[in-house]
Image (cartoon, rainbow, N blue to C red; front, side, top):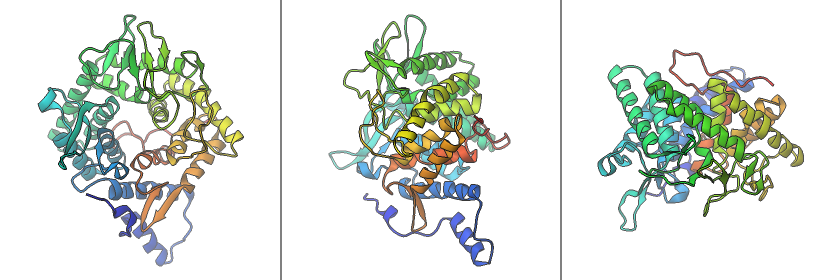
Length: 410
């Protein structure tokens, strides 16, 4: 099961073929920038499917022995909804249900987080534990799909039913409430979470929770929103005895009195995990105009990003200490991608700067468009986000709704 397809020449995706064909017929070669971005966005999805999604719907990680994680299935399902790709959505969903569902073994509707090649040489689940970020993205994808593709009604109803079952188990097994009434999302399921509880801030998905509350009438999801923003405000400024620079740590913990500090045996730097929170909070501002989201993105995060652009000759790195010191000079398309929207809120020129950097890191090869490296599943799962914000690709309902609003003007 060695995947070499990303390094071989392939047929041009349909969008590129049409563009070349029209050019050959004498149409103007120059495209406006928006059309180029839209084409790049579609090509990147076509290329992602080619490189990272098997014909049966399994999302692979070539750098990790071609294994699969539940987050990958959920990322692909969300992206399929937002690109109106029903076939890809159904394949990724069916594979996840057939291979990752914990229902038979554990009686819940969460997903086993890790599937791959076992020591015996067989392929299957390697760790039955669940990851709450994947579970919440999985549920959101199902809710959005039920709105995006409403016919046949029986199929849409089944997706919505499954989503409700998933989020009921997230609430039951993957959240914990402190004595003061604050509720936090935990990284994994447990029937009895004990405080202090370990937290991954990048799992905090307030826009998801507002939709879950709307779909179920369960007000506890809004409690999770409120508690989560209290956490974001606190840990962006202080973590134990460390003073923050506006970034979020990869991991932290909360005690009985809602005090936050470093989590034992977990990384407190701000890097490959933490940046996912910027996208999740950006969605909350885009869809719901949440003032808490704007407060963090525009008043706390964006000033740090602007400072980095100024001090580092127009660069933002991906690996920082919690205090905001660059650990190295490594750059990533994924980081530039999630920084676009926060910067858009305060500085149009800066947001376009990072978008141009992002587009400049795209590699066109053999009809494929990928970012940074052709076999990097994680970067290519996140590098499209900035372009999607720019193109208004993110929707919180079906095709009959108005496109998602663009980022607010400064």
